[in-house]
Amino acid sequence: MPRLSRWMIRAALVYLWAGITIGGLLLAHKGVPLHPALWGWLPVHIEFLLIGWVAQLAMGVAFWILPRYWNKPRRPRARLAYLAFWLLNVGIGLVTVYLLRLAERPYLLAGRAAEVGAVLLFARHAWGRIVSREGLG
Amino acid sequence: MPKLTRWYLKSALVYLAAALLLSLALALPPSLPLPAFIRAMNPAFFHLFLVGWVTQMIFGVIYWMFPIISRARPRGNEKVGWASYLLLNGGLLLRVAAEPFLTTRPQANVGWLLVGSALLQWLGVTLFVYLAWPRVKEKYRGE
Image (cartoon, rainbow over all chains, first blue to last red; front, side, top):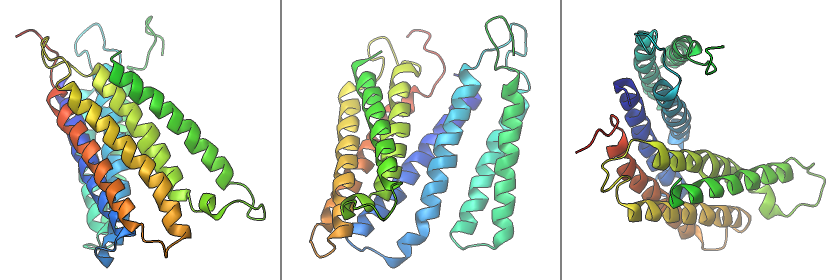
């Protein structure tokens, strides 16, 4: 498993754990009220689990297992994928800061733009690796 | 494919079918006489899909395909894996039953069931993260 995949998958596991912790608190709060401010964390629960966990895990696994080239660099344009990792996680951070009402709407826009940029960069990296055994795209 | 993976994947497929069946019921026109219990299952639908299907499918594949730790203990402590599976599924099923019940009968004193469900699912995921973490590594190349 390459280094970038290890970073992405470990980050995804951290988001899974954080997301399920928030989700667990929300569910418990639904049954036995704990604190009225807890519902404000619902969008963060969703952000962590959909973007931080599912999307990031898929990207990390794709970087690892998609077909590699015969010649070096075996994973082409890997820098784009590394940049995608940083952009995605900065994006999640900015969106989270907004969702917790610690910042204004520009943070949300910047965060979503970073997430979109991350996905486009990752897609650019992965596109050429989505091929048949004969190398047909 | 290890036995635990087979259980994860087959359970995931059952949850997918159940979630989509439930979504079909929820899509029926409000004029149809559907039990209030079913109408209150929107959160259950999302979690059957995302926890029951998506997350369990991922867990099963991770347990199967991630690099092994060593030849002696390829996938770590299998008992931890089974505990994770049982806790996650027990918690999810408890939620699916208790949440609509609480919504339709708020006077019933069963809120603690949701606390139990939350705790079971949290423990299940925590154990799985603990099990998977050491397998996020380079390919095993011998001792």
